Image 1 (spheres, rainbow, N blue to C red):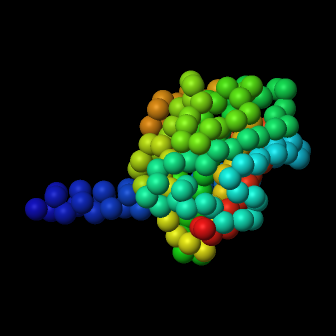
Image 2: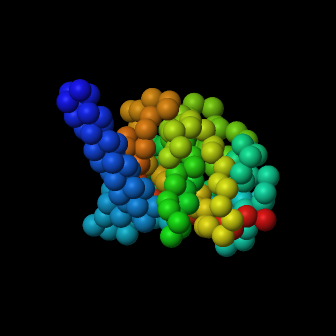
Length: 185
């Protein structure tokens, strides 16, 4: 019995440690701190959507229960970029969450279609463990769709966890941009 209870306690500690690492990592990627080129300003990527403006509510068709990601468009990718990554997350006093991670998007790609992932791109797991877009549900929160130009393609597989994807994105970012939806329509 001691072994079982000791093992369960270690499992809980490991789970808490993993959660703590993930939350710190989310903060690092979300804030842009700790990215490559921290000793110099990062280039700025322009991110837009045909379905909502920066600061406007996220349309309900891209929120809880839908499963459809919004279309996005970006520009001003540096010519030295080797790939693009996208992280959709929530930053709120109620708690942070990552809703979507897409990486190894071809550096020449400038559009993400509604309910689609560019050919050859890979998706990581979000906070809930899902691979793919996990629509946000809490009205009143801010939902950020951040696009990162990276200096490499990431050597990670489909379904990679946040403790792998977010630090890799942070360590290879050469430019970034974001569009933020405030609340849900």
